[in-house]
Length: 205
Image (cartoon, rainbow, N blue to C red; front, side):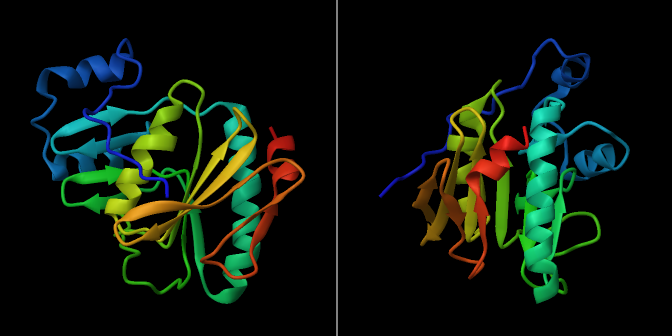
């Protein structure tokens, strides 16, 4: 069994970024409503945790190519079955005063009440594409966040080693359902019958 432990502190991405520097003087004091209002009028990806706003780096083209492919694959499978798939920017509430911006999220029912107007109150499945500037963010920190939100399945798509790790929620922790490599197909436990060719995913970059 693989157990993921929360990182001890919130890390700030790119501390020399002008946006980060402008937020720094009142970090820890932001309210949830201020965060929501800011992200309503920002093109930056921003996450929020108990008064702290974290500015995420702009995704690189390789990241976006993989995301575009995965989005098309999930939509083709989920939409005919009555579900919905969306990609960032989209705020997902982990708990009160904590929000993340997953790369991709799925609800099996497009009428699921968790699909709120300003943000989602969770998801059935989340996907993150690992960034080379901070791989532990998606491989160690996010599993703890998404487990806390009760998201049943989490895919870690890692271009650094060409693997797709599928985690499934058992109680309040994730365990590995499978680590899928080139020449294999990554399989979902939640979405019966859904799989993706690992070669096709990473050849997209």
